[in-house]
Image (cartoon, rainbow, N blue to C red):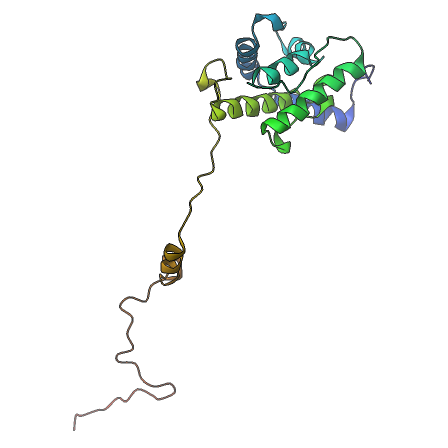
Length: 202
């Protein structure tokens, strides 16, 4: 898996398109947030895409990040740095499971290979952006950093109506259906009768 050779032909073209989605400015903002959120203990990545991937690849930084967003019990109890591939991928999977429980939707989640093999680091950025947005939206005191780094997610505004209000609404004709105000049949002739045209001139 780690010794995968270079891509050719269509595979290379597809990978090139995926690589173009990666945002260098976003990388800097996300790095700044992760360090502000977790503390200087998580270290700092080397400049560039590969350095950023290597920083997150073993899953330790990601696990520290999701734990820092929990005020009560930490979702990931054991975070251990390891050089073994399956241990690193296991920690990435633990982060993804914890992020889903935190409220990140499946469509915003990256796959383990996207990070570990560097297949789609833009997807990793997308997941971290969604996580930051969720943390800012929750506003439960666990978020550290500039709130303007992420947009707030829209929150459901549920409304409760009484039985009387619901019954009142049934008698109202919605404007989407047109209106019956001013409707009149004055001047209309019966169905099938021709209009009488009389010529009174001699």
